[in-house]
Image (cartoon, rainbow, N blue to C red; front, side, top):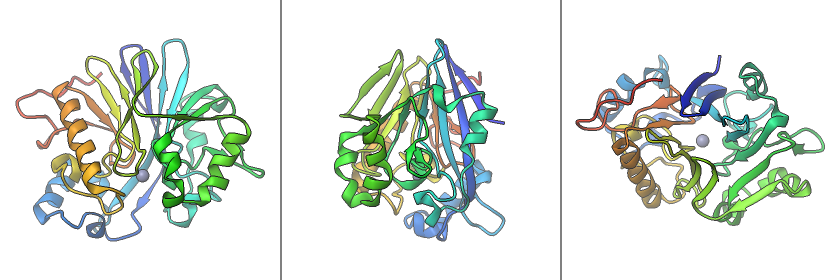
Length: 283
Ligand SMILES: [Zn+2]
């Protein structure tokens, strides 16, 4: 059953598209992590490691429902069995069942924020044969910088993703921080990819839907730690350390794609609390 949180008048629902082991030994993904870092991460996020020491990832999207019923989706998961992620993802996705369980009709999604152009974040964006937008009434929001980097990131996505969205006039390129509706904001968080973006629910106790700003609890404990698949590690580190510090200072919450649990508190302490600051109340 999808996990839901209420932030003011917004309902935020975590939707699991799938789960499985990472395709490499996890030490290759985080070559700078020490044994002590791994021990702390495993203690804090036991669901992210399996009994043989592999990194167990979730592939998660988030639905944001405003008080007036408008719905925005953040990321589009692994996708079906014939999606571009099928070459490496451990399982096909099951987002349609998760949406149904959450009571969300794909036709009522009015915006889909694609945090970046990695295949495990765009899987359900367009589906079928011929390819059509799965969310038929949504505009799809992508950063201009990400669009411009597509040939370096994954040129096949021009035909597999961009062309079908352009054919129905559903692709909307945005440039940097952008207010979507009310307290809903897209914020530029570059580094993992050139035009990576996250979504901020800019409430007094904010929630940052991170995309791949961080991908493992290691990067909560030690935000400077690079992930091997980042395009620009220095920029990624700046984005990550800056945003984790800001969310922590405001007593906020992170909503992540790949960690063992959908919601985490930022900060390096054992329960995620920033130094001297109580955890935000669970609501
Ligand atoms: Zn990812």
